[in-house]
Image (tube, rainbow, N blue to C red):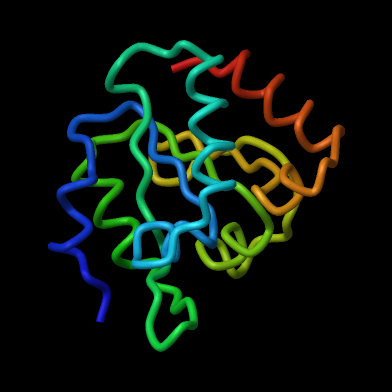
Length: 144
C-alpha cells in the first residue's frame, strides 16, 4: 500500500508545481540514488524559482525492491499541494499517469492543470545533451 502518510511530510503545501519521475518512489524510500537527487537539486538551484514553486511527489513506491505504480495517490497529492502545474519527467512516468495518451515531450491541460512532459533523469544522467537542453529551456521559459 502506498505510504501516503509517511511521504506526506515531504509534500510542500501550497506549491505551484509538482514534479515527478518514475524513480522518485525509490528516492523517497530507503535506497535513494544520490545522482538523481543531485541532478534535481542543481536544476532547482540554477532555475532560482521562488520558494513554494516546486514540490516533488511520487506516483510509485518501492515494495520488495520493485516500484509499484500508484497514479491515484499521485493525483491526491497534487490536489493537496494545490498545484496548478505538473512536470512529468520521462516516458515511464508519463505512461503511468496517462496510459491512454501517446508519449511526446509537450505541454497540455489536464483537469485544469498545466502538464509539462520532459525527458527523465535516466536520459539526463546518461549525458544526453539534447535532453538536458530541452529540460533546461522548457523550465527556464515556464510560466506559472
